[in-house]
Image (cartoon, rainbow, N blue to C red):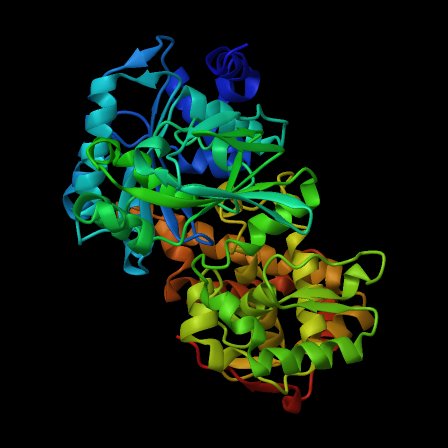
Length: 585
C-alpha cells in the first residue's frame, strides 16, 4: 500500500470524519497527529483551513524548538503536481510579513493564530512553511522550489524556509515516527585517483576521500531524509546562518569548499574502495545532513562547480551501539541552547549536589538527553532541570506566562531563578505538586477543562501550579505577590489529605479565568487567542480574581461552610512561611 492509500484509509475513520469537514482538512490533521505527534485536541486547534484561510491550512507553534510551522496540504492521487501549490506557499510567506493585513482578511481560526505567530516572531522563532503532498513535484516545480528557498534565505526580515514533504517524505517521516525498519541505502561513489585513502584504525576499516560536489547531488536519500536516519536531526532548511554560509561558498568560492568545510561522516555495514569506486552498503550520514541538504538545494550551481570537493569520512560499522555513539559524538558542533550551557553552571551543580544528598535514591537531571537508570534510582526522586525552571517561574516568580520559554528561563531570567542555596525539599515539593497537576491534563480531561487549554498542555499546567500558590495566599490573607514555601505548602496538603481537593479547585479557578476571558472577547467582538492569553499578564490577574471569587463564594455551596473551615485549617501557614516573589519579567 502506498502512502496515499494508507492516508486515505486512515482518514476514512470516524475520528477524522466526525471532526473535519473534508479530506483536505483530514489530511492535514493526519499529518499533525502522525508526524508532529500532536494529540487530537492539539491537532484540531492547529487547523485553520476553510474560507478565508489565505492559503494557510494549519499553524503549529513548537515552543520548545522555537519554530512556527505554517502548513499547506495537497491531498492528490496523481503522481506529480506543478508549481501552483508552491506559489500558494509563497503567497502565505508574503502575507506573514504583513500580519495586520492578513488578520483583517483571515477567518476566525486564522485570526487567532496570527496573534500567536506575532508573539513567536518577537521571540525570534524560525518559520518553516511545510508543503505536504501525497504527490511529487514536477521538474519545473522542483526548480521553483529552489528559487523560492533562495528568496526566503536572502530575506533579512524573517528567518524562514520552505520544506517540501512529498509522497516519499511522508512515507519516510511516517515510518520514522513509528520507528519502523527502513530500507537501507546502497551506493557506489565515483572518486578520482589520488583523492582517497583506505585505513584500518583499531580493527575498523575507514576511507578518507575528497568527493566531488557533483557526486553529492546524486546520493539517494538526501531529498526524503532517509540518508540521515541515524543523524541527531534532519535538515533545518536554508535560512539558518550555517546553511546560508554553505550556500554562499557553493555559489562564490566552490573551488575552496573543501578547505572551508569540516567534512561529512558516513557509516556503513560494508565498505570497499578500489579503482575509481568506493562501494558502501547500508549507508547512513551521521554528520553532514545540513551540508548535503544545502548542496542538494543548490544543485544547479553545483552542476557548474568544477574542481569542487567535500571531505568524506567513511567508517565500516556493524553494531548499532557504536553507530549511535558516532552519530552523537560527531554532532558536537550543533547549535547549543542556553539550557545546555547552564547544565554545568555552578549554581545548578550546587543544587544537584544538595538534591542528591537529601535524596540518596534520587537524581537531578541537568544535561539534555541524560538517561536515568530506573533500576538504580527512585523515579519519585528524579527531577529535570528544565521542569524545575518552569516550576520556579510559575511558583516563585508568579509568572507562569514565562514557563513556556526555555530561552527566557535559562538566558534572560536565569540568575533570578536558580539559587545555589535553594532547598532540595522545595525542589521535591514542586516536583510532587507538578506530578499531581499533570494527572489532570490528560486526554480524558478529568477536570472538564476547556479543550483549548488542553491544546496547550506543554505549558498551561504551570498556570495550574500558580493557581495553587495563589490559593494559599488567599486563605492566609497575604499581601499581593507573596509566595508560600512550597515544601511547607505540600506538607500541609499531605497532612490534612487535601491534595485531591486543592488540585481540582485550582484547576476549576483556572478554567473559570480562561472562559471569562473568552466570553469577554466575544462580547467585545474581538479575536481571542488562547496562546496569547496564556502568555499575557492579564491571565495572571484573571487567575487571582478567579481564586478569590471561588474562595469567597464557598459558603454558598452545599457543605461549603465545612469545606471553608477545612481549608482555613489545612492551608494555614505562618507569615514566615511566605516570601516576596522573585522578579523575572
